Length: 313
Image (cartoon, rainbow, N blue to C red):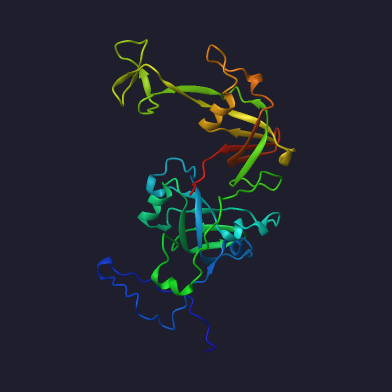
C-alpha cells in the first residue's frame, strides 16, 4: 500500500469489430471516473497543467493560420461558455464570459462533432481529458470531443446546465486579451480608405468569381451559372475606426461584416453609387460581436478587431 505508483502506463485499444458496450453492467470499484468541472473552476485552476473533463457550449470556431497545412493537420480555436461563466453573479468578478480552447490536429474528434461545428446553432460538446491550467485549455493527444458523455464517464454525473438566455460576451475594455471575443460599441471617427474596396458577385448564386464575358468584354459572366450577370450585387471590405469609452487609450479598428457595412452606408450613398465619408463619421455603431486579432503599441496603440457571427439557438 505504501509503494510508489508505476512510472509508466498502458494505453489499450480494441478493434471496432470487437467492442460490445454493456450499459447495464455495474462499473468496477477499481474504476475511478474523471471529475467533470465547470468552466469557472477550470479558469481558476493553478499553473500546474492537469487533465480535466467538462461540458461546454461551443459558440464560435476559428481556424488557426498554419500556412500550407493540409486539412487533416489544421489546428483551430473553439470559444466556449457554460452556465458558470454566464450567470449574473460573475459580472465584474474578473472571470471572463467565454474561454478559448486550442484544438490540435492530434485531438480525437468524432465525425458528428465536426459536422455540428459547421452548424449555425451552438452545439454542446463533452471535452474529455483536455489539458487545463493557468486559465488555458488545450486539446491534444488523448483528448476526446464528443456530443454525448462516454459510457465510462456517466458515473461521474455533472451534466451541463442549460443556459436560460442568449450568450453574453465581455465588453471591450483595458483587460481584453488578444485571441478572445468581445462586444463593442462606439462612435465612428474614421474609415480606413487605404484598404476599402468592393467587388461584384452573381445575383443568382452568390458566386464571387465572375469575369468578363468571353464574347463581349462589356458584360460580366458567371462561370458557375454559365449566364450573363446583368444585375451584379456588390460586396465590400471596410474597416472603421471607433472611439470607445470603455477603451479610450487605444484606437479601435474593426473589420465589418457585410450586414453592418450596408447598415452603416445606407444613408451615405451618393447618386453615382459612391459614398460620402463625412456622412459616416460620428455614427453610433454596436453592439458588435468581435474577435480580437491584434494588440499593438507601436507606432501607435491599436486594437484590431474582426466582426463575427456567433452560433445562436
